[in-house]
Length: 230
Image (cartoon, rainbow, N blue to C red; front, side):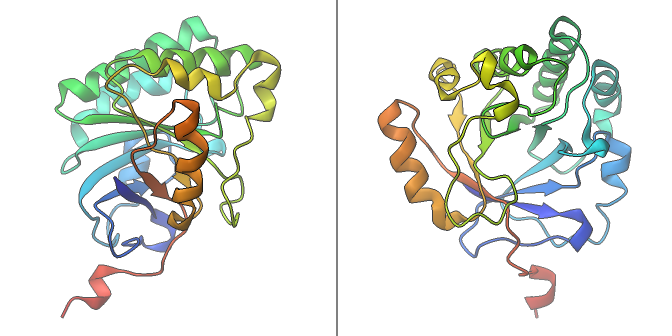
């Protein structure tokens, strides 16, 4: 999988020239807000994912937000999957995890794939460090989840992959060992600042027993297919 994020606020991107997948990324936690920024986006490439969630206040996920996501899911048309960007989560594990599970099941029932990306090893902003760890442990065991994509960057402009664990939950053991428990059908496809970091990423994880089978690039190439088609 050679994928990339296409940012809504820049009008989108068409990624590296050899891309075979793409993720529409708006940073919003609700489908209507995300759809509002889809018009005029550069054409997406290959297998297409619609993202929900993000790293700031617009992307906070909770049980109520996830329940509304399920209600609105029929509004998402023309996509092959949903990418849940799980970075800021409100609510206890016992409250929010069933809502995540219901959302994943709804996506699969709609005939789409489920992908999850987290900030480094786990969500960086949860009500307790334990919740971040528990969520990832649940995600990697959930057979409705097809792809898990840890973000190996913070700013997105790193010149090399950052393999650090999420600092906010380090006390609760949110390290790479969690990913050794991925279910058999799950693909480990890290999000990288740039695709040129993939070889180093694969060399780091493969010996740990966490095989990489692709990447998702965060940086934009400023290459828009709608400006080069003639």
